[in-house]
Length: 361
Image 1: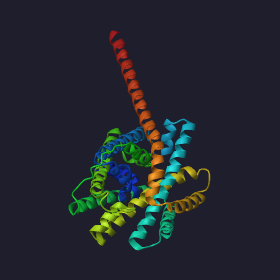
Image 2 (image 1 turned 90 degrees about the vertical axis):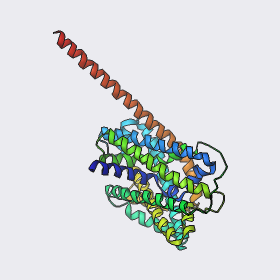
Image 3 (image 1 turned 135 degrees about the vertical axis):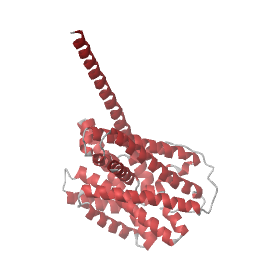
Image 4 (image 1 turned 180 degrees about the horizontal axis):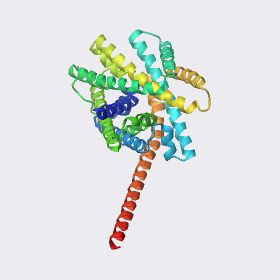
């Protein structure tokens, strides 16, 4: 029972790291999938396969070598120069994500309460700034709980909207691009830190495999449901900056408020996860207080560019950089596995030769 609970903690924590404002709002699903037509569902499946493979590549190594931090994980696989490049890519993406979360929070508070976006962004960053001074491990535990709430909330809300949908017709556009792969790429740039930190809940590679597969399935179910809702309405109504919140508010104000709360949880979990990544890397050079201050200023300033615009530019660019990192991690994992297998075979061969020699004597 305890093993199952621990595996679910890893699944929810990983899902919480992937499910940010862009995911839960539906803006990412439109930008990277829906706008390319109904066959973009293949891209959704491909992304989730990459999510699972990457999770197993990181978790299995961390469990086997008793690694609990992403820095230790990078030290095991990357040479000094390459590790520095990975840290720079991670830092840039983490800051971009904090900006996106800030923009989404400002947009949400404007839609729901009429608060000016700039003030909403400042309020959100003030709350997150206080969280950054809390214990990192406690935050990871809270992320897992919020992740479970978000998963349930997204699935329930999507089924509710589909049950009472106004349109029955799907779009006829058929286009496929590398968007699905770049989507997985940028989402996985910083999740390695989350996976490394949560690997302590797992005992062996078998549990790592189960957690990885379950994570991919959970993410696929949520992405499929959001994709289905938005594919039905895309091009037929104005979905706004936060499409899923627009759809929720079309049902009724109470349902819109419920989805708004769940979306806020998604924004917080992702902002905090990426904020800690920024702190982990940047605070080695300058003080923690200075990092939090500059991160807040940059996030509020960049949020003025607009939620969807940042996703379509910064995220897409980071996606291609993230792909290099993801495939390098998977390549090193496969290489390490082959090395371990060869060592085992050589060891078995030595044992057999020793036994044969002993028998002859």
